Length: 335
Picture 1 (tube, rainbow, N blue to C red):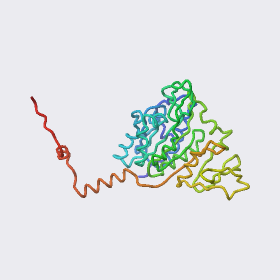
Picture 2: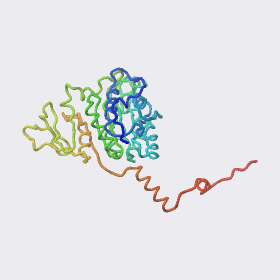
Picture 3: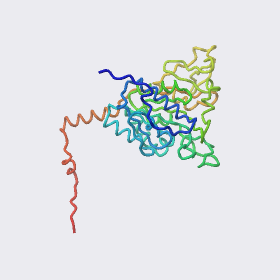
Picture 4: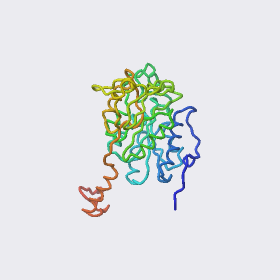
């Protein structure tokens, strides 16, 4: 029996969406709902897991299974789910506060373990649900409810943090380009391992326009570069500019005068990601969007299953009663 062809409408739940009008979350939700039908996965085999925050309402709005869990602990819940039900397509919706503050420890360990889970981080550089406190990604000097004289913290780069944690797939997109978000979501699903997507997302109430200097349509051609594996690093309204690899940095050159000097992007080479995250936004070097890094390595839940099978073959199936009475035990006596 052939599986019914699904559409975006099949992934829209009956819940009223409770985000502020104009919030970037709407675009992310729509991009995911439009992409999932293309994956060929039945709705009952998809689960969205979230923690706490505006982004964490996501599971309510998806007509799939889902868990609205504990602040910062979505990676732990999602990991347990994937280990017990490895056939499921598991997704995490989280924010910069949920993932990188109280959930920072769980975030890095999910990435280093490399379960086949997709994590979408909504980065608006502010705490939105709790009404406008600065977050781990807020820029120095950010004036917010909790920093009335400006933040003096050095912010996290989610991409750098993911890289340092050993992520096997790192991508960036933004809420103003639906087609690009859909493309990145599809690439994340296709990757076997933990896929990390940073979405530059606008909070229209408490941090409106924070990403505008990079993502606004009027400036985007010069401030952002859409990277693709095997393609030259070109940008500008007519792709008239390119990036040349220098000594530990990029150099902007004319794509018309020096086409052979322009570097070809390799998503398997961590050096490109490191150079971008060090120099982007300075000296005219654009901020990259796309799949910034990808490599294939062992998937955690598969190794767990293999280990269980090997131990079972060697020692046989265990018994709970023997396990409970193994090792040091104590008998508690009354008076």
